[in-house]
Structure formats: C-alpha cells, structure tokens
Length: 481
Ligand SMILES: [Zn+2]
Image (cartoon, rainbow, N blue to C red; front, side, top):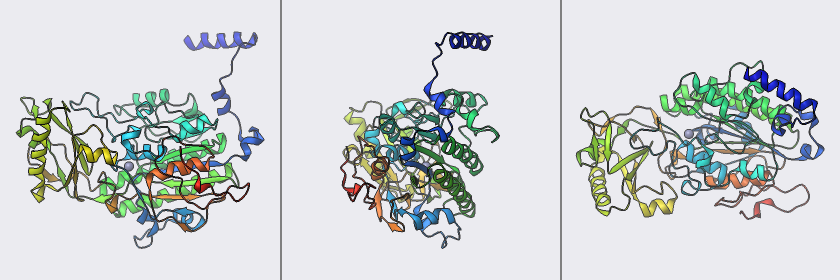
C-alpha cells in the first residue's frame, strides 16, 4: 500500500513538472558513453587492497612456488615498493584508514579493528562507521573536487562520502544483516550492479569465492559508472593466512586465485578509461606464523584489576582492561588519571615480561604511544614476539596453543609486517622499485594522481618520477596540505 501511494505521488508530481530527479540515481543509470568530454579526459584510479598481502609473496613469487602473472605484470609495467612500513597497530582497520588519509591512527581516529567495549555490550562491533574517522579521506577530498567515487567493501566505509557505495558491515550474521547492508548502501546500487551476476556476499562472507563475486560487482561498477576513484577490498587471502599461516599451500592457492581477480579489475579500469587509467594494489599489513595465545586476563583477575561473575564466565567490573590487537594488546584504565592503578599495571606487566615463556617483547608507555601515533588513550601497549598473539581466556594459564596459524598486529618495524604497494598508469615509470616506503605516503600520492589535495597526510608525495602531461614539472615535489 505504501509503495502504491508513493507511485501515485510520483506520477502526480511528474505530471505537474515538480518531480525532482535525484542526481545520484540519474548518474547511476547513466551509461559511460553519455559522460561529458571533460569527464572523459580525467584520470581514473582504481585502488585494490588485498588484505594481508606480503610484498615478498609477489616479489619472490617463484621462490614460494606461486604463479602470479597479473601481480608480476604490475611490477613490470609500473612502480612498486619492496615493502611498506605500516602503522601501530598493524591491524586491518587502522591501516586501511591510513591508506585513505595518510595519517597515523591517533590522528585519524581508527585505533584497531574493534571498538573498545570492556563489558562486551557492543556485540563485537568494529570501527565500521566513517563518522569515527577524524581525518580527511581520499573519498572526502575527491567529493570536494566534484569527482565521483565508488567503493566495494573497503573498511570504515559506512556513511562515507562515496557516490556509489557498497560498504562493509555485519552484525548478528543472520539474514537480516543483508537488509542492514542494503539500507547502508547507495540506494538501489547492489540490485543494479547485480543484474545477472548472482547474490552479492553478506558482510561476514570473506572467502576467495566471495572476493570473486565482489570483483564482478566492482568490474560492473567501474565499467558502467566509471567513477573517477574506486576502492575495492579483497579479504580471502587474510582469512586463509589466519587459518593456515602465511605461505601455506592453501594461502598460496588463495593468492593465485586473487591474482586472476587483479587481472580482471585492471582490465576493467583500462576498458573504462583507455590511456588514462591508474591501477594501484596495496595491502594493509603483512603476516607471521604463530604458535601461542597469551591472555592477560587471568593475571589481571588475580591482581584484583578485573572482577569476574560468580561463575567466572564474564567480566562485571574492571580497573584495567586489555584491548586486543593480534600481535599486541593495549591496556586501558577505567580511570586514566589514577597513578596508583597505572603503577600496579606496569609492575604486573614487567613481571609477566620477565618470563620469556609469556612471549612479551616490549611494554610501550603512553609517551611512546603518543610519539608513535597508536592507541592514544591506552596506558600501555604490550607487544608480543612473533609467534605469540593476544588470547581472550578469562581464566586458566596465560599461555595456550594458538587459536590461529597466522597473525599480524605486531609493531610496524617487525619485517614480517611489511605490506605492499604497486601502481601502474600512463606516466608511471615501468619496472621501478621505490624501495621501502612509509604507508602514510600512499594516500597523498594517490591524491596527486587524481590532481586533488589531501589535507591531513603526514608524508610527502612519493617520488614516482611522474611528470604532468602539460610539461616537465615534476609532480613529486608538491607539498602536502
Ligand atoms: Zn588486514
């Protein structure tokens, strides 16, 4: 009934000439051929993130027994980093926000994957919402420059300023999650892109098969809407590396399948914008093999800093609380100004670190966290040695067998945590190694490709050796805002 009355209203407005066509829906149905000549001259950039892709997986593909023709072609045809030094912590969400802003987590506001939720009231919520971000993103800067943007599943994209957005979100894992996903996406976009393609994956579907399906939607988005800037996020390799470890036969097989998807996405970019397409592949962090879980909860309970329910199944009160981030764990204080609690926690952590069986590498204090731009509200960050990850047992021994085979979240200077960067485009030098780069340099470099400015980036534009087509002025020297 509601639908019918809306149709009647629309018909009435159309007859009186009062129907206002929504520009976003008009654009969504506009074939590429109808775009204006000015649009047809602009660069087109597709940015693909392969979660957890280690640079050596591509640079030394043969030594690892992998055949990656499409990723290797990016090295041959474009410029690439030997490795990317990430941010603290080397987790998916803060790293993806750094890739979009050029800022460290303390400045961009996405501190790890999950929000701090000491009593578990938020149902395992992640930093899904763009409104948690405090720095200008590439999407924001593109919108400000009146460029169109597209997104398939990039982290922290719910409510982002994106023209064609299929954001990442899940909640209970029930069928209703799809309705939430639809409600938070650009109206009608999923159905329009999906005609004949089959169902778009739900938010918690993260296999290589789900990547393949999202890639089909991304290809159609790029080729029919031709956004100036499109982000695509692929997560099947990360899932497999957590399950079976980096460079396991299954992880290598997953990457070989993702390589084919990279070839498809690059072809779509070049079909959408012949001669002016830039194609960039990044990752958010590396990966390390692990054997042990270390839970700080039992030690905090024993010290009276956490109080459990009578059946010891849940936390009912706390003064100090772990906030896990894979290979590291932050310690939050209920009262950050309480020096006595801080000293008690510090003494406890030092005692635990003195036993090498606990796998603790370093204890970073608040001053160091502020210097390094991670977990600005934490009292301490415990970093583990490679091979150990944060555990979540409330009781029992501190160290148990690992619940995964692979993990990240260690400090960015740990060599296994290095991530990846590859870029091709009309004026990007072929076969050029950029050495080891800082992750914060990627966003301003992509802004430069799009001829826009990024406000909050910490690092200068990468010296790709590009020249603008109007003359010989090197773009690499431009300062960041
Ligand atoms: Zn990740």
